[in-house]
Image: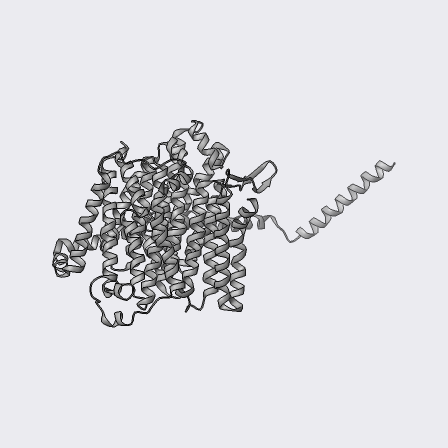
Length: 616
C-alpha cells in the first residue's frame, strides 16, 4: 500500500518532464505517455480502494532545523480515496477525450504535461495529513489552473482569464496561509485529524477557531468559485474545454469543499457552519439564476458549477457531511460529462459556442444528444440519476436544520428547481427544434466513437448507476448514511416543480419561440436579462471597488508615504552628509599627513621603549 501511495504522489510530477520531452521528439508520444500514466494512476487508486483496511498514515517532514520541524505527512482514508478516484478516473477520461479535441494543436506536449501536473496537485492535496502538504498541493493546482486556462496565451482573452483566475484565487490563498500560521502558533499542530480532535474536545478557544474557520473558508470560496470570488470561474471558459472539465469536475473547484469536509468537526465546534451555509445558499441562487440567460454553452455550465458546488456547501453548512460530499461526488461526474459533451458539440460544429446558432443537432448527433441528456437529467435531479438523491438530501437537510430553515433553504430550493430550467434550455437549444443556421447544421462533423463517445458513454453510465449506490458513497465520504427526507412529499413536490419547468422550457424554446421573443422584448425583462447575464454585476463591482478604494485611496496613500516619508528621509541624508563632511573639512589642515606620520612614529617609539623596559 505504501508503494502504491508513493507512486500516486510522485508519478504525475516525474511524468511532467518525461511527457514534455517525449512530445518534443514526436508529438504523438505526449498523448500516449499521458494516456498510459493517467490509466496507471486510476488503477493505483482502484488498488488502494480494493486493499483498504485502515487509513494509510505516512509521517514525513518537510525540513528540520534543530528542534524545529515542518511536518509533511500523508493520510489516506475513505474520503481521500473517493477524491483520488474522481481526480484520476475523470482525469484519465479527460486525457482520452483530448486525443481528438487537441489533435490539431501544435503544443500538445506542453498541454499534457500541464494536465498531469494539475492532477498531481489534486492527488497531493487530498492525500495530505497536515495543512502544509495540503497548501503545497493547493498552490500547485493554482499554478496549473493559471497555465491551463491561459494555454492559448497568444490571444488576449485567454491570457487575461488566466491572470484573473490567478488573482482571485490568490486573494483567498492569503487567508489560508494566515490560518495555517495562526494554528501552528496557537495549537502547535497542523495535523487536520488532530485539529478536529482538539476542537471537538474544546481544547481550542471557540472565538479563535471561528476566525480560523472563516479564513480557511475564504480560501475555499476562491478555489470553488463562490460569492463574491466567482468571476474567474466564468472567465476560465477561455481555456480548452477539456481544461474546463478538469477544473469544474475532477480537480480544482472540488478542493474548496474538500478542505471544509476534512475539517468538518473543527467547523462544527467553531460554530462556523452557518457561514458556510449562508454563502453557499446565496451563491447557489446567483449561479442558477445567471445560468438561465447565458448564450454561450460553456458559461451556462460554469454558472451551473457555481450553483451546484454551493448546494454541496449548503449540505455541509446544514450539518450533513454525507449530503454535502455525496453531492460533490455526483456533481463531479455529471459536470465532467456535460463539459466534455459541450466540447464534442463544438468539435462537430466547427467550434461554435453560441447556443443561438445551434439547434436540431439531435438528428445528426444522436448518441451525443443521449449522453448529454443523461447529464442534464442528473443535474436537474431526475431519478434514478445520481443528482436527484444528493440534491434532495441537501434540500431536506437545509429545511430540517433550524439554522438554515427559512430564507437559506428557500434559495437552495429555488436553485435546485432552476437546474432543470437552464439544463433543459441548454439541451433544447442545441439538439431540439429546427436548425437555426442551415450551413452549420449541414457541415456538422461526425464524432469518433472510440475517442469521443466512449468516455462520454462511460460517464453517462456512471451518473446513472451511481444513483443506485448512493448509500455506499455516502458511507465512504462521511461514515454515515444519507438522511431520509423529514418532510413527506418533498421528492414528489420537487419532481412536480421540475416537470412544470420542463414543460415551460419546451414551450418557450421549442414549441413557441415567438412567445419567448415577445416576453423577452419587454423593458423589465430586458433589465432583468442584463442583470442575470452579467452575473449581478459582481465582477464590475469588484473592479470598481478595487479601482476606487484599493488603487484610488489605499495605494495612493501608500505611494504618497513612500515618496514623501520614506524617499524624503533617504533624500534628506544627502545634505546632512554634506554638512558633516564640511564640518570635518574644517578640522583638516595641509599638514595633516605630516602630523599623522609623527603620531605613528611616536606610537612606534613608545612600544619599543615598553618592550626594552620589560626585557631589562
